[in-house]
Figure 1 (cartoon, helix red, strand yellow):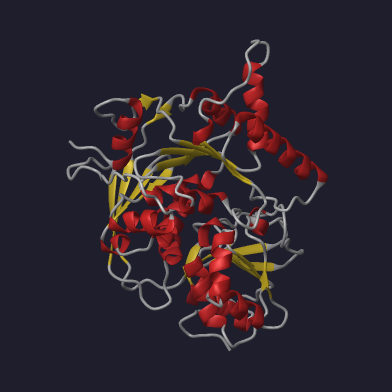
Figure 2: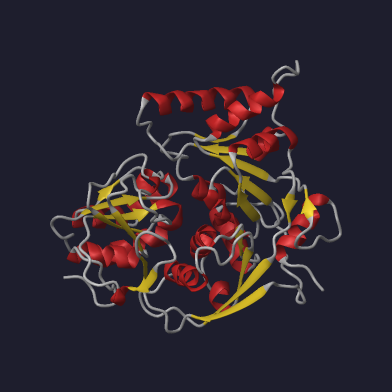
Length: 430
């Protein structure tokens, strides 16, 4: 039998002809990413060298990326001190892929990596963030690690004791109906197989819909694959991958394109036709509590968020701006917009999306993770309801266990902003 995409990548990363699901390997790492939690990794990394008499030195400073994005600008003296510690470490270790709090290079880590050309097909990418799965959109095997594991990677350049994951093949056919987006597809899939349906597996995406999907949409799908328990999401690279890397990531060197073998062995094959798919909503307090928007009921919304590593890209802002242009957000509704990077922010400014959103009543935030994880900006009050394009709605996820969080696409979010209630974008706002 042939090899799946992840088996091929891990075989290359371990210098073997082939590896199989269940085998334990120690792959070399192509890129290691951290954000503010790099401060924790630094502590663990320095501990490795304690009492050795050796000078702490990362294995390859060119293969480490650190992006400040979760608490930017710093909201407390503790955060500011940790960020200072990271800056000092980056300078001492000569790490060049460092993105500080700057308007010319900042943004969310899972947007900065692809748009900066740091991720290429066939790479092994690890990050101290569960949504590192995003980068499978570019044909990399990309997954999250803890701080201690990452410290080991910084020292050794490889991941210890990785079990080659089995793969679930997801074949997606049909075309999206009007106002149905990649976010709706991944919410539907999570609802279909449950939050544990892909535990420790790779979700490998195929089919005409995926082939015709933009890299932005693929990033959304791979980003939320972890919400089904997946170790990673993977889209075999193709002409769209090449287009994105050449035109948007501005890669000029060689880009290798390869995919799974035609006779690859999969643990399961899912066939999905999206032709009849509706806009979907994940209801509190689990991501797999998914319903078509029309079945959610009349839910009043206090705060709407568009952005994050899941849906803060240019096409997401375009969808929202088109719905809101020339209209006004309902009184009593707060709408926060978090572009995924300053590059996207600048593009949205030039195209007039920011002006349309502000005129409608939205508040534009600086690029960053903001209120997604509930530690900085946009906190919810007791009993309030948020509707968000982010990726998790666990109790307390956005900072208050006494609030409710619903997840949706940018189209549902924008339409709901006009009415003040969760609204089907196909029916429009007021």
